Length: 68
Image (cartoon, rainbow, N blue to C red; front, side, top):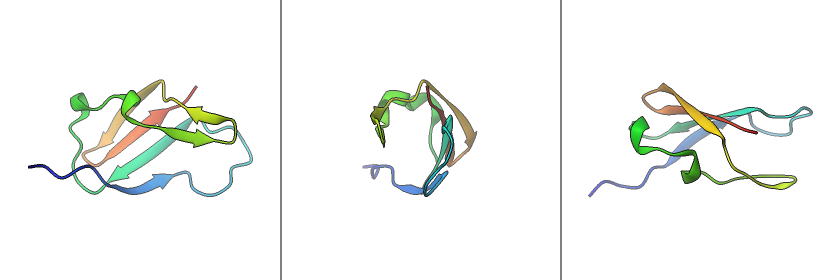
């Protein structure tokens, strides 16, 4: 049985003084890109839930989510 995905890090971090248009997520193990969907992720910002519009696999363990 494959363990669930665990997040190892997220960029950017902390407070941002401008709109964030993308978020990089680094996972503890390799991500199989075709099995991933932006709908698998829930992000919460000051205005509520943010659903990514698309993503790019940057490396075996890193995905870049693009935000509206």
